[in-house]
Length: 83
Image (cartoon, rainbow, N blue to C red; front, side):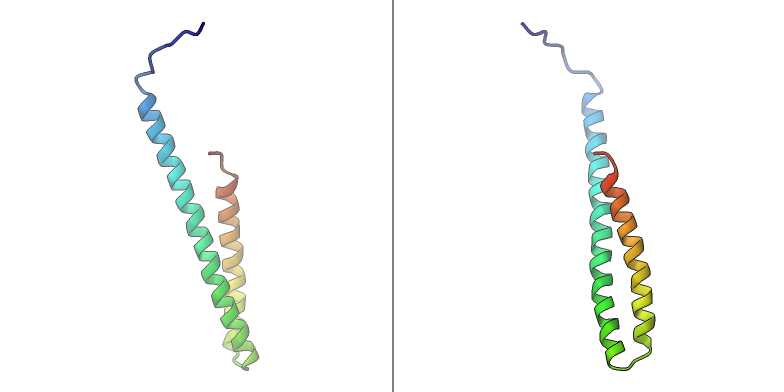
């Protein structure tokens, strides 16, 4: 035999808050992943410039390594956050 209790008055508000927090977390993870993908493309362009003898390629590659690190840090931070 189970006891059916009426739902708490604030239950929909709590569920909506959880849903909004989850959506924000997903958006932040997606943004970090998109930054990572764009940085990968620019990194490849930098490597091509290096092979073509352009000095700016080295600056591009160094910049992309920093962006990779920041995007990976953010992505891992949001991945480890509890649902």
